[in-house]
Length: 77
Image (spheres, rainbow, N blue to C red):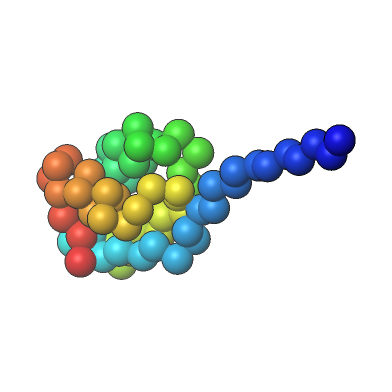
């Protein structure tokens, strides 16, 4: 009798990039990171505040990340 083991791997999308016009300081970045990490505690966030650029690596959909950003007052384009 053969035994089969299946594993489910969740793949992070390292290619989510956003322009967040009102992300201007470290406090903004912390608030954004905390909110995204409520959706995925292992999400990785890289922020460039002078250029208002946000890079997110997560298993959550881009639509969900955008929705969270709007919800906390940091809409992205």
